[in-house]
Structures are given as C-alpha cells and as structure tokens.
Length: 235
Image 1 (tube, rainbow, N blue to C red):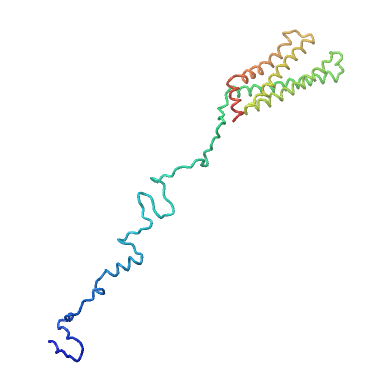
Image 2: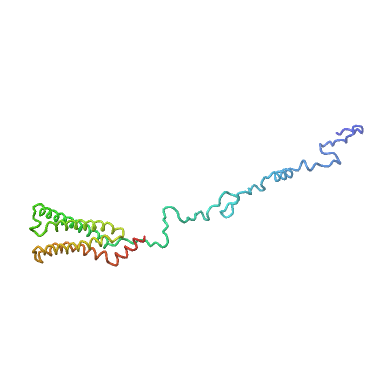
C-alpha cells in the first residue's frame, strides 16, 4: 500500500512496484552492456574479432616477420658452395694418363738400372787396367772404359729422372735420356770393334742396351702421348 505523497519533502512518491517513477528518463549510457567497453577496447589497440594483424601469413609468406621462408620449403643453392670446386674458364681439364706414358716410364727405369750396372762394370775394368799399368799396352783401354762409365752414369740419371718427370707431362728429359742411351750403345759398338772384336761379337750388348730406349722413345713420341702432355702442362 503506497504512502501519501508529502509535498514538503520535495520528492515524488515511489512506485509500490519498485520501478522507476513516472516521468524519469532511463540511463542508457550506464546500463547498456558491451557498447562502451567495445569502444574502449578498440581505442586501446585490442584487435577486432580475435585475429592479430601483425605477422599475418598469406600463401606461406609472413608479413612483418624477420625473414621469409623459401618457396615450397626448399632453399635455392648458392653458387660456389664448399665442396664443389669451380673450374676456371679457358683451362682444359687434363685427361687420364695414357698407358703409353706409364709403360715408357717403366722402360726408362729398367734401362737406367741396366746402364748403371754396365757403368759400374766398365769403371771396375778401367780401374784394373789403370792400376796394373796396362793402359799403354791396351791402347788406352783403361781410359776409355772410365770415360764410358762416367757417360753411362750420366745417361742413367737422365733416364730415371726423365721417367719420373713424365708422369707430370714433361717428356723432355725422358726423350733426352733415351737418346743418350742410344748414342752410348753406338759408342760401345765402336769401342768393341776397335779392339779386334768382330761385328757379331761387338753388336750383342749395344743392341740389347738399345732395345728399351728405342721403344720408350716411340711411346713418348706417339700422338696420344704428345696430346696428353700438352693438355697436362696447360692444366
């Protein structure tokens, strides 16, 4: 039951139902949920709809990130990576060493050993003749044997060094050593025949000593070996 309105109190009578009094405007700004808070959140920088703007990915590419991944997950290889040597332009690659080079080098090694043995034998014979004062009686045989021994040692050195150098493409010393060995065989032939030896007797050892260097020179002068040597020296 409502109380009577007192005009002296300065206030309107309250509704018995607890509602607002007649004529009082409702407060829309305070009782509308969500409108004021959404505006405040937008002004404070919160994203709308729950989706962040920075770092948004499109088609595998990240915007605003520190780096972009490679397309499809694969990284393009860079030129000049370690483990892959870059061959310079203009320098032809050296082909495989021909078998003729290896065979020629082996023959010169064998020939060098044979020439050393012959030189030691000649040096020993010349020493015997000179020590027994038989040089004049044998028409200076001791002196000639000593000279042939020294020439043989020089020839053997050229053969061995030339065979080793041929593996690197340098065939000059090998050819020179083989040519010197052929000349030495001719000198031995002349020396043997000058001491009353028949041609058949004098030709045996010089011919044996001339076989290997002749074959080695033929291998070194072949077109295949010469072509490989030129390319090898340019590489």
